[in-house]
Amino acid sequence: MIPHLIHVSAGEDVRRRILSFSQGRHAVVILSGIGTISAVTVGSNSGGNVTYEGRHDILNLSGYYANNDLNTPRAPVGRLNLILAGPEGSAIGGAVEGAMIAATDVQVVVVALFPRSPKTKNNAGESPEPSADHENVGNLVAPANA
Image (cartoon, rainbow, N blue to C red; front, side, top):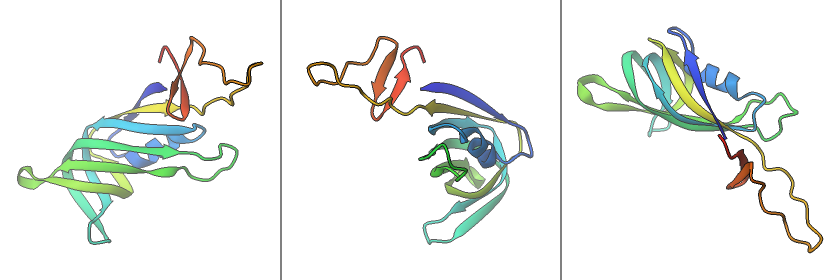
């Protein structure tokens, strides 16, 4: 697991930058984001999409994108969830379904995850313990110093 900070300039599409970053990586988990959004389309509870325009501060940004096969050019699967400060102190948001345009510089904290290496069996037929420089994390293996 290696943390990264993605810097998105005002006027850029935050979602596109995250998707671009995730290319060539097994999985990316979005931990948080800070900044202001000028336009975003999110899925609504009624099944349609809602577009919010105007300056809205990010309250929460989270999600994940995973590439099942790094050898194919397919887009990663996943979801980006967003909660914004709405008018008069309300909270608005949902799953991002389209462009998410930054009104100010936006910083997004993500972690890149790596696939677990195939385990080899020792002479007793048991799987070896993780080495000192790696730690098992669920179905993934992470450098211990990350």
